[in-house]
Length: 501
Image 1 (tube, helix red, strand yellow):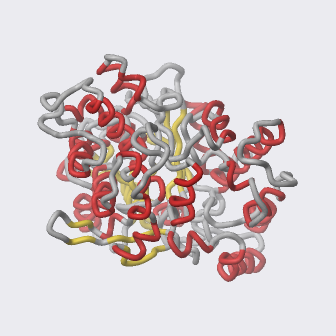
Image 2 (tube, helix red, strand yellow):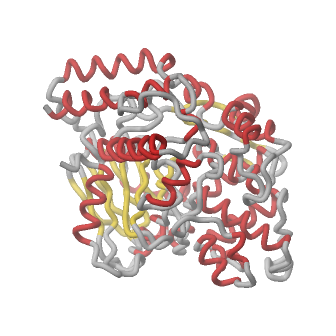
């Protein structure tokens, strides 16, 4: 009935979370759940969902994590894990081929994710161990902290890293080898093979070539007013060509990586070593949200600095969307003289200042100086600062918005207003994708959306389409399937039937 993934997360949270509890109390369950597709050789089927009551919003928080860790979790023999209570000293959980152990992590507390991952992997004595981990951001209970998988993939939204930190849980380390069963293995593998042979023709080409944030998305988005600029204050970013995924490909990208069994290969890998700083390739690379967030949203056109911001957020376990939104909020406060250079500890926290942006990320993760005020997101920062600073704090239900303009994407605005999580840009379709014929429209027809809908349409047909796509997204998050692999709804139904019978 609930399939897995987000379905399991929602079920257990509604069943086991006592009304009114503090999200950072030991009583808040932290749920990890895979789905029936996870761990099988199906493109897009390697994900895991993590959820809890959100310290940022007070409602449900759940996000999905790509890469290999969900794949290994299922192959270790588990569908879900619920973590309750709090250890007196830091621990990590070691899941290994059907066995679970809780081990001391005191030596790793305070370490960045890259250092802690390497040390714990050496301790357990296995190669290619997969991890779900927090860094200083989660340990210091920043309510914009995330859980990071394999050093580069984030369970980003809602402060789940803080929930993990509140339990003194540094990491979940996973290694598994058992293949899940399939009711109709031949048909299932044939369909997997079909997608890996045809994804370029059914909507996966852009993801394969550049990941998210290519010229069409960023330069085109800039032209139509979708690219967010300087904390929502402007509608056009003159230097956009410097920060697109196409420019990443041409300058700092060294590879594209894939999740298990998927030929789409949408994950950027960047590497830098210059006079200013280095960027570790194990941190992956910035996707659209991060390129726009630490780029145009902070007024920064320095691609190297954006890549460094992405690495810092990954290794410190901060959600790049909420972190950048909070930094941009602080920049606007600084420029409006709500606080000054003494308040920021000497940091000239202005739009366009890339070095100040990077310093602010570190201060937030470590709760140093002004970072302690900013560490819990824009809504709570504005409450602490006062002086009408709430005018610059953009969020829905306490959750900072993705890098998309809801005054343009009006169906997305409806979704922000009514979905359970708030400013979650992945909860439904984005209006421009329904505005013309193409692969997205073909997918839309599989859930009963018969013809294109204008971007500015706000009639019953648009509202119905937004709701249908929301249901489809929740189905995919329960199955659990990646939204970037261009399955139709009917194909997803076939996947579940072939797998479960």
